[in-house]
Length: 73
Image 1 (cartoon, rainbow, N blue to C red):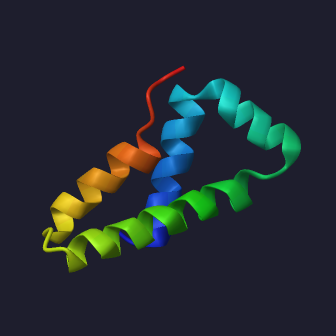
Image 2: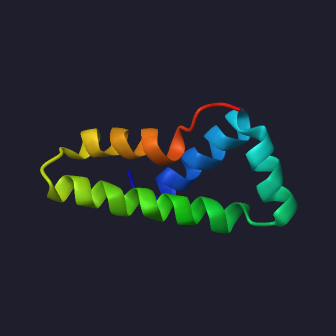
Image 3: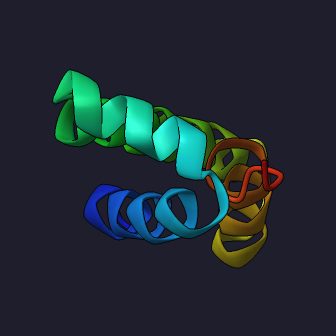
């Protein structure tokens, strides 16, 4: 997944499953900045995992669980 794909998934997941967090971001006007920052961190972690020998799909799953698919509120 690319950074933009990660960001898109963050928005979908957080809006649905983390409504308090999402509302706080909307009210602060920082949805784009925050979701992009998390997507960039996920992408950097993915690249590190791949350099360590993870296949791309496995690296995607690790970072999705850690950064994107957070537990519902």
